[in-house]
Amino acid sequence: MSIHLDNKIVWITGTTRGVGRALALGFAKRGAIVVATGRSEDHSGLESELKVFNEQSVFLNQDVSQPDDAERIANEIQMRFGKLDILINNAGIDPRKAADEITNEDWAQVIDTNLNGAWFTCKAAISLMKPAGYGKIIQVGSITPHYGFKELTHYMSSKMGLEGMTRGLARDLGPYGIRVNCLVLGAVKVDKESEFGNAQEIDDIVNQHQCIPGRILPEDTESVFAFFASADSDTITGQSLHVDLGWTHG
Image 1 (cartoon, rainbow, N blue to C red):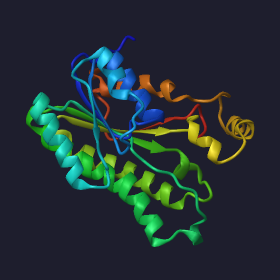
Image 2: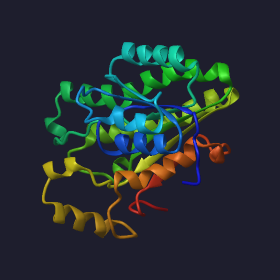
Image 3: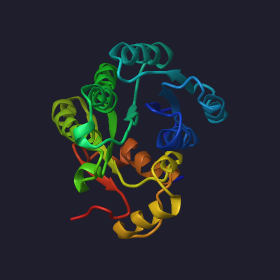
Image 4: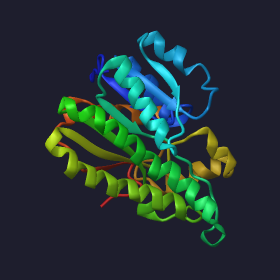
């Protein structure tokens, strides 16, 4: 691992599985103190795994749709560490439903988690980063609104909103040395895929669209996040980078 994040304080949401869990463990291996959050009280031993690399790392319960939770986590970070270097807004849900069947409750649940949740967490994190005159915020986007997928109108709306938020925050926070970028993920292979069809059929569909065949695993994305979290990317802000093996390009 050429990128080191020794003793950087990193807040990562949605870490109970998939990309979030891979990021938490990968950053811990790079020397970061990880504040991993999620809604599930059963986080399958994540905290103990993180503490193998740094005893100060911790898992805290957070429902990102609740602004009070974001403020509570920020206060906890301030109390324990006195600063926050990096925030990764990874928490999100992606239920499938045809547009004309999406209820107002369905819409609100997705927007509250994916878009409002990122906003609440950003707002809490900014209060910790501004005094230091430096920080990194990384949003986790999706290629879905760039390509167009059925049964994901609410999800795609939330993810495109994240890219708009990224650009606005970059402008407003630049004077304080805070960089804000969005990593737009492609078809990352996660356990939840089994809910949506046959594994081989899904692999075949993905490979038809990507420039480079093969599946992106959660741990494959970690090094890209590490670059954007590190000082190596200090000249980059307000950008969306597609991490998708060429599904969308041009």
